[in-house]
Length: 428
Image (tube, rainbow, N blue to C red; front, side, top):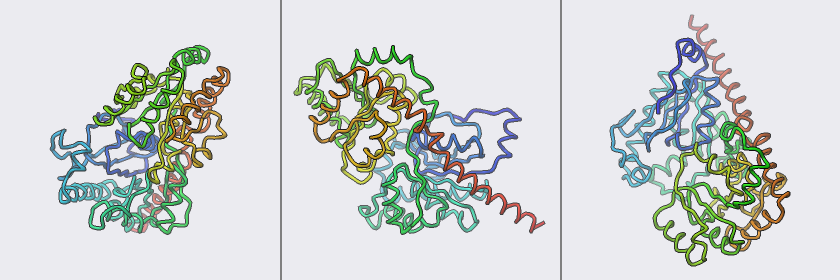
């Protein structure tokens, strides 16, 4: 979708703002934390966002955000929808992948020359390496480097584009003005690998305040939840996400408890889940409604009784996923208690909050015990619902989490702006 169209006064106000160039080698429409960050930045900066032309755009962006979507041949490459999916892109040959990345890098270089930004905000290694190649550092433009996941460079082939980009980003990390991660253990491991002794800024992937502006009256909501007793999983379904174990746990619980797993799943996993529901005897208590647009999730989630986020530690990113899993905080926004993995990083973040229960995601019996304990006492259950919402309102909404980054970006852009003014005076 197109950005909203401002009037003449608004356009003049936007034009007077400092200039920020953002880059991400994905479609930002599908990444809520990136949307939240851009929205916050766009309130103070004139933002140009360079991104990959992949999947169908669907968001309406703020008026102060100009988006340029780049394909293999530059902006707005003319390709079919079928060829523009993530799956199709991953199946491309090495030459096609390299051509597309070169197009993205060239677009970013043109944007640097055209917009003359005071600062660049780059998400993930592809964009960070492209920003350096575009001459940002040579021009004195600071780069903010925001990562969500740990790159898997040791597993990437030496001659692959991904492997080259990951290693290039690691070597250049110390050149970034600031590094940001959603989870402190991921940050520590990445910076140690990069030989960077600085501390990263930590911004958990929580939703914005307007994700769930308000809830229905508590007494009414608790009564409905206690009666329905629906467990809710939101997100991509997968073998590493505890979905099969949740079905097995349901077979150990009171037959009044139901399970809804809402999100995309490949055909083989969906068939396996459906077969398992029949063998466990819970087929009538499990729903698989598929994917819903992000903006429609709150209305569906508010009526559930508890959230599930049971990622197994099959890799470093999933081992340290507590602050990086936006669904945990989306459950909190809906006032839902949550059942999460019984691992140190989760306990450190959530144990004192009072609205999280912990279970081994590989153990259906442990999951069932956590659920049963959650529903053992109505007053205690209601207190956990209220604690979850209070945590969102007071600690885990994006405006608050992103505030230190926004302050840092202001500082860096201000320095760059003063340098621009000094250069202008010297040339006068």
